Image (cartoon, rainbow, N blue to C red; front, side, top):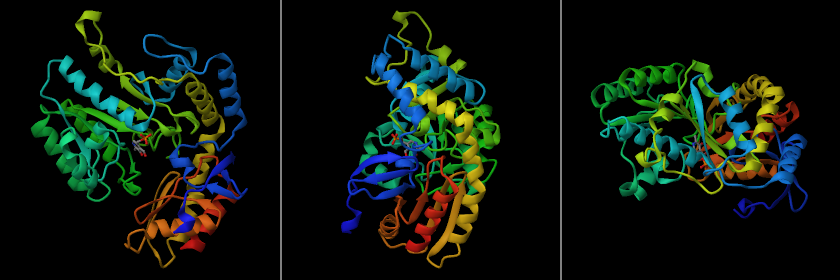
Length: 399
Ligand SMILES: Cc1ncc(COP(=O)(O)O)c(C=O)c1O
């Protein structure tokens, strides 16, 4: 396993990383699913430098600043209809944590304090902080941290049992909506669960059911947001507007830690009152809405709209064709794809089979990171035809 020791990366350029020996690797995991336009992008670098000349950081607690205000407006502009308020933080976990806390507090403020449980999917992953782990479906995490976690009710993943998922969700909402604050899910595809792709229609079904029974819908687009599925947000595929939208990873183009939790006007209005009413949302991180991160996020959004989103769309079919060829290999059990997110499930269920394959892929000049026995393709959305060819060839050679 010597070659699996961490590489020391010294530089990035476009879709490639360079180690201290000067070796070049395709960044096939987008530096943990966050890089959008490639590394050292001149426009993003310039936006960062320009902001640096003004100010690197000033608090967003009780004060505001131009990059934060401008990015919030730009996010509202591209987000699904009805999401008009933005709460910044700094990771995917905090984006989810904030949605959970706001939903919980909303119901208290609206005189329904019994609504304190959350519905979540089997195998769900929403981050590593306690609230996010509580609405996750990773059995190991629940075993270790169980007593510390928020109360959640599991719905089977629709990727594994669509009818069962719809039935369980509908029954829970019909019989227990007075106990349930929100249903939280990743739309279309559960990334960290191993790229489990949902059948079309589940997201819309969830929206309709939550609206019918007065339960919030929290959509976690930390992985799927900012072009990953071929649209700016995965919600667009089914015309769904959630009550909360959680964003992180690609929000800053993959440059700096930044996250946002978007909410509706109805949710925002519940928190309004005089200072002494203590209705405000009690949550704020030191680096919330860091101005450098917001400035680069704003430019990243501009680049997405100018051309990177179109490039992502144009990649979907070539990725599908490449995966179809990889699926023919005898060591491959199956392939799954949602936009420019893909999983290659190995036939081998041996522990570390995925790690060993990724180790060999690395020696072919591509960085990938497996999820169990699933090899994940999650390249920057700026991927070019020759990069995809390298990704396919390295994967095929390793398999
Ligand atoms: C869907 C989803 N939500 C939340 C998170 C947590 O994000 P972070 O690692 O930035 O806390 C992740 C991370 O992979 C994710 O994929």
